[in-house]
Image 1: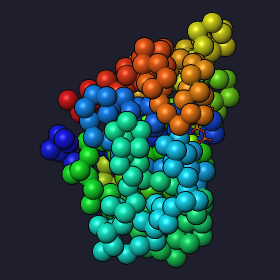
Image 2 (image 1 turned 30 degrees about the vertical axis):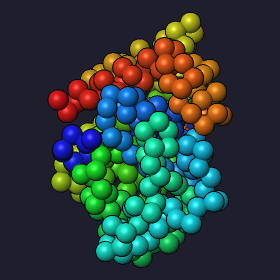
Image 3 (image 1 turned 120 degrees about the vertical axis):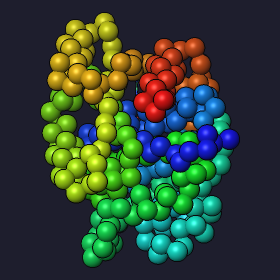
Length: 263
Ligand SMILES: Nc1ncnc2c1ncn2[C@@H]1O[C@H](COP(=O)(O)OP(=O)(O)OP(=O)(O)O)[C@@H](O)[C@H]1O
Ligand SMILES: [Mg+2]
């Protein structure tokens, strides 16, 4: 059962590709379910990787998040229940994405208040969940803006790789622009991913991140673990593969830190 308060919305975003956004959305979401929380995973990526991860095939669906973005406010209460697939990954609910989400950039061109569609539509289902996790696409655009406007917390996975820090400027530019018009600035935390402690370069990048981001960094560091790839190929979570694996323990620790933020 949800805890009786409205769901907290976590946007998992970084405009850089392949840094662990979907892996974090799926496994952090599952770790929160394992803590007894009611969690909805929302797939905002036109490539629909999180949807595929849940073994749902977008081409088989009559309805996707795209319909939420193009509907009138009054229809949202009817669309959410048709859209949400319950218990897709061991208790995790999923709102599937679709390649059509890529059309929104042009479809919404003339639309008023187009940056807050997701936030306004999610209001209808907030009481049903403890957490809503948004898996964002790897670029800056209308979907990312909608995610940031809706978010109570922006979680930024950063690959512990030398080039990873450079790409962040674009994300922070978007964040700063939005913060000027939002009632309060978006709260954020970064999490280092794919960390390999045997590699000197990884260790150096982690130090650099700690230096630059300080308290905006979670304490948890997600280590490199081949079982993540295995899990996504099999359409399951790392907890299904081995719930004592290093990767599983990392996301359990991250879930603990996320929960502490609202205690
Ligand atoms: N900690 C990790 N250790 C090893 N492999 C990982 C780890 N995290 C993610 N991966 C693998 O790296 C690849 C990219 O991860 P993922 O799909 O989560 O990134 P993404 O940021 O969502 O990518 P995109 O920008 O394309 O949406 C996947 O094959 C995933 O299994
Ligand atoms: Mg992804």
